[in-house]
Amino acid sequence: MSVSTTMLIKKAMGVGILLLGVLVAVVSAQEPQDVQEKQDASASSAPPANARTTYIPLAPPFVVNYGGPGRLKYLKAEMSVRVDDLESANSVRHHMPLIRNNLVMLFSRQSEEEVNTQEGKERLRQTALKEINDLITAEDGKSGVVEVYFNNLIIQQ
View (cartoon, rainbow, N blue to C red):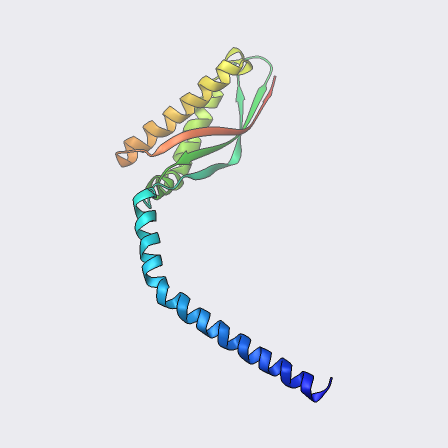
């Protein structure tokens, strides 16, 4: 590279840095108003901070015998619950042993006819939701569990 080329590159870099500095200054001068307008707009349209949906897995999976006397039948259920606030999520985590106990008892009471149909599985899901909500309401005075989902449901007859 010749000396003149090197000098041209240095001048171009200097001009580029100067332009970048001017651009940053202009943006910085406008930013407080823009940021405040964006905050005002998002505050009016955003849901409350505590209205955040959380999914909590009920791990490990449930494995229970069901169906009464006769040949052993097994049900394996991987489940999650949906809550819409942090307080409810903490409540579910806190009462997890009691929730798991009650769901094991619920699943083991099922008959073969109840778990073999799609409608029976949906009733079981709804009953599990009611069981969890009743339990947490009895313990904490309110429950924020919105839904219960089967992530996986295996029935061996």
